[in-house]
Length: 286
Image 1 (cartoon, one colour):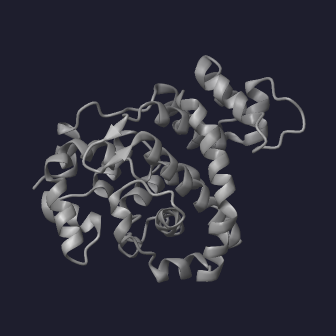
Image 2: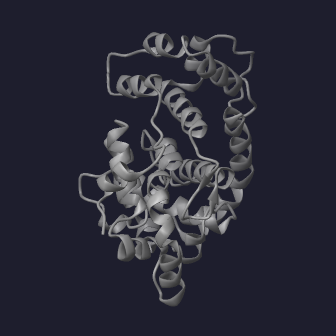
């Protein structure tokens, strides 16, 4: 058996977010920070600047004129979206070519992450509710624990798969029974070490078991990521064998304020946007 922090100590080549992203995250918690403060962090980073301008000028954001400066991009997209895109650009660049233990390649992992992020935003819009501030980021990073746990999991992957297929257990339950922790718990600790907002950490920790989230968690965000994760597999944007045992908790759908039919409608409507955002953000991976 092993604890989440022991997993992080044993993990090889564990990715870290660049200083610029960490500084942008800190600004999000500063109520006095404005566009100029974000611009000061973005402009010295040529790759980040280029990515933001390319995305700002994409059809996805629908700019009516060409965006030629960082300040214009920030004004168009908003500071939170700038942080989310900066985090996605950085995250995509540190993905290994293959994640051992999960039978995932970088392309599949990335596509699934983008799908969950896009679906979460579509679901909360359909429910007519105010989106949690870090919805896209939580969706994009919900499985980061797999990056660390993969190297530890690889030697036990056969036993985990056997348990999952032999009994009525999910992949995450099998993880816990075999090694004593799971990618949600490990991801929660990673998010803390990356200094990500607490709401994102909770969404990562509880996205497979939203009913267990503590009272001080952003329950709406947890539910959105839970539903979107399972829904992405239904749509064919899954990334690993664990998708064989994924289900959506009915109570989570009710808490969000949607019906099963509305969730299905959102799924159909979001497919094209998932593909578009995947193409846009994949360009950052080179």
